[in-house]
Length: 265
Image (cartoon, rainbow, N blue to C red; front, side, top):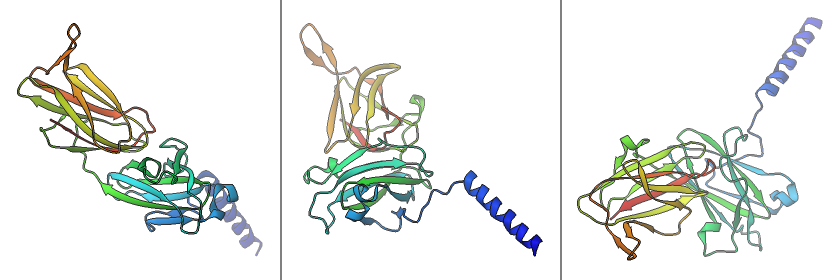
């Protein structure tokens, strides 16, 4: 009997050591966004009342982007307000801004209610929510096939008037390259849309020379960037010489993710 008790004691100590070395990140309070496309947090689950964050787990079914939409909870008379942040599978590494503010007061502006995160197939992510009051959180996911080149020498051909979609996954350092060909002298008109929780950098190259750049933030509609030659003495603009040009899209900082669409005319 003493030997049996001694073995039980050793097993208990081994289990305790294992838990210390390999901490468990999934708790009974974690919400599962794969099983539930919408989750309602009550006033009692707000950070003000509970003094704790709410963690929501999501495993990406494919390369693509997750869209989080916040709305007022039916049980609440107040507009939902709070903060979001995206973390990796262990909740140890921040993959977005630490405090992404949401506010349903501005019902006509999706910027305050919809948030997009680029994701990699098979990876598990955690959304940390710090609600100030009751809120309804919904998610949707869209698969993206990004065929852009990782290097300028492998740039994907961007045909005129044909849009391409690119993915910027959270926690991944990647650069997308495209090439376009002018068959005559003309201005380069780039049209883009972006859904991001941070900032992209869009640059245009002629060979190794950068001839134009712009910081790209969340857009509610299509935006345009025109690349042309400029004569300082007269203030007139002219088209670019015919030839091959390159477009480079990258993250402006490591905590950016999402997707974009790009075409030229």
